[in-house]
Length: 200
Image (spheres, rainbow, N blue to C red):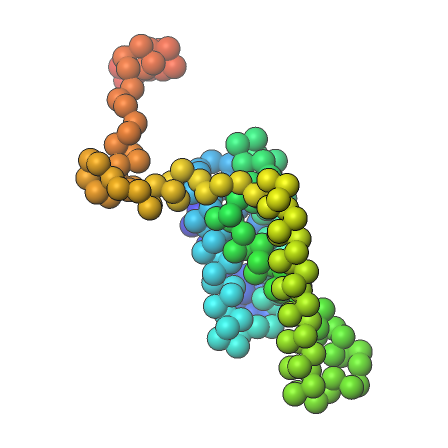
């Protein structure tokens, strides 16, 4: 996870640093394949990219870095059997998809602006961009409604739902979720470790 965050930050250091996002996507894949907390990494990188855009730090390097990270990381993560298509179905992973779509819409608007002289005026371009995003929101809402009607979206994960339930043991959802695990039996140690268990 540290490698994923470090490589992500390295990929946006300058507008020319975006190739580092390829490694960030690969690091994200390894994180997703080894630990269930990959959703945290996914959402934190998406949030970081969105905050950078909101602060006016958007540039072509950020666009390329986020696009590469998202496409490589998400497509490889779907190959992990326990993850499958959840990056495109689970509600808790939708924010990063929304950031990805927003980046694509912003890039399309910029490409059209550079090819059309009518959009040279900042106010005209602003109105054009608002219209593009309004249309995208309407189309997106329609697509989401159809997909929801077809049962495409997965319900919230157990850990997310657990944040909204009363916790019996400690009152802390994280501690209670870990406390649910039982101690490993001696038979399991013998079966999987053999005589090496005595060395440890």
